[in-house]
Length: 241
Image 1 (spheres, rainbow, N blue to C red):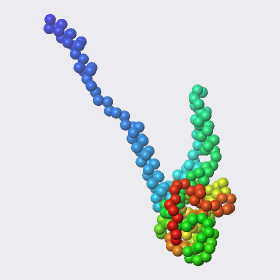
Image 2 (image 1 turned 135 degrees about the horizontal axis):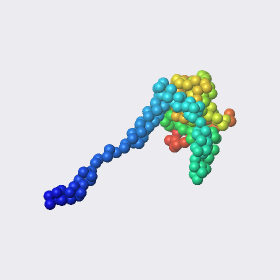
Image 3 (image 1 turned 180 degrees about the vertical axis):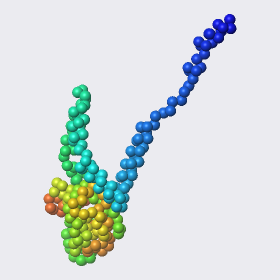
Image 4 (image 1 turned 60 degrees about the vertical axis):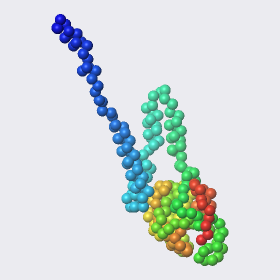
């Protein structure tokens, strides 16, 4: 009887088989996501910083994307190896967009955060005291403010003029150029590839200026146009200076 009881108990006693075992969750995907976010934040912060390391990082990323990364080739390979029943029209449209140079006027941004001190058009020059045509904008910019490129492009010229002082001209393609004047320090050289938002200079009061200010001019096909009509974002009311 005891033997039979033991046999029956061994068949129905499944505590070992039913014992709950903790399975360690796989957080590998989360770790990789966090690592990628941290690396992106570090690279982006360095790019926006007004330091030599930041400028090196920005130039390196720009060079890599422009020279070493052929997105059209990658799309061609993805289309070639995609299953026959997969719709690749979206990739083809992306390739068509990437093949066309971006229009700088679609995303041009302010070079400094300050308000507009003098607008485009005729005005009395604060120093020369005579009516003059101003072909750009003058932004409030404390001495040493980082001046950022309004759009991606290539440095066309670095000059020193009697009126605008130290100036930078950036060629954005499509016969479009921006000019930055009254600078205290220039951080780029002719021929440098520039990304949007990259700090290219520091503001100052070089040339004929009543105080620290940034002069910003936009030229299309060689003719000056009002930059306020092309820059993105709201502008505060003009102040006199």
